[in-house]
Length: 117
Image (cartoon, rainbow, N blue to C red; front, top):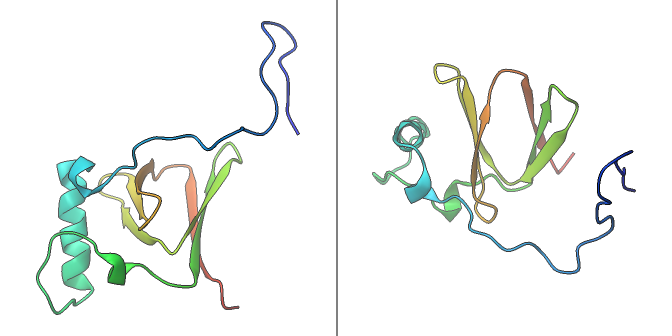
């Protein structure tokens, strides 16, 4: 279902004919403050090896993060790592296949649910 503007040029409404292509945010694209937060998370998660980047074994299987924003829009991420950083007023959502995302913490409600329930 699409909403069309009451005035102005008509908008294209309907399914995309092909997926949008683009680059995902990766570790090297992160602001330095988030590279440090990932290192903190890795250290606190008691990983045996010393590293400073996430790898495939870090992501939570059978889980979904649901983010709801103050305008009632929402996003879902499967198998994510969620790191809240109140000192930055941000929350990081890190996924293996869909990239890394940083959101403003104010006005954002985050829930983390198991897909096994």
